[in-house]
Amino acid sequence: MSGHSKWATIKHKKAATDAKRGNLFTKLIREITVAAKNGGGDITTNVRLRAAVDRAKQSSMPQDNIDRAIKKGTGELEGVTYEEFSIEGYGAGGVAIIAEVLTDNKNRSTAEIRNIFSKKNGNVAGAGSVGWMFQKKGYIEIDRKAYPDEDKIMGVVLDAGAQDMQTEEDVYEVMTDTKDLENIKKALEASKIKTKSAEITMVPSTTIKLEGETAKQVLGLVEALEEHDDVQNVYANFDIPDELIS
Image (cartoon, one colour):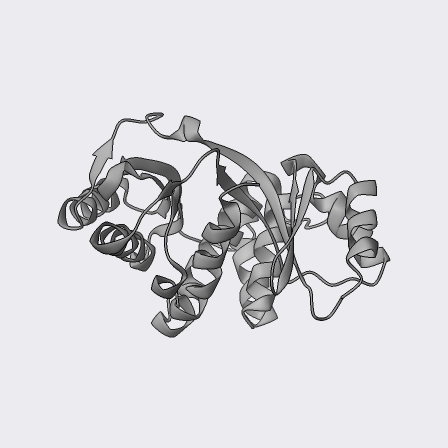
């Protein structure tokens, strides 16, 4: 799981910024709609939808909004058709970046995201140019303060098929194969253990350690991408000093 902990910290500390911007609900609704369209509206069988709904509930989205988004995805209600694709590129210092996009206008979104890369000292690369540096994984966070018995947590998740668990200052981080994410969540629930988050993510195989101006430039690029309404997720393979993430 090397390198993922810092990146998870960056993403989750910035979640508060997403909420303040007011576009978090918009992104979650799009994700729910597309997940329901691609895999059906049953959260018990659609892992991607279950993860999206869980995130929406953790962000205090009203149930009516969640239900409408699912129905738009399944066709029970009329809705916008979204296209999903990824844009790959590099930031300062050679950092690899993947931006996952959901949009109703691919040409517009592509042009705007290319412009962000250009303005923030990065450049867009061809499809597949950096994707090989990342692996799709299931990722679960558990509040360490709420569940101090590390051995118990580890026993539950490893017995359920988790690939790895790491103990950080505030959380346990559990890494899984994507197909095992739901089974491990159910095992935790059966043991009365609540998760802080559970999602499908992209984990870099290696990370680049950055400092000074280069670190600030890369973080600025990532933040600008995440602020774009059509960008659902941003993944990058960098490690930066803690004081820059606060």
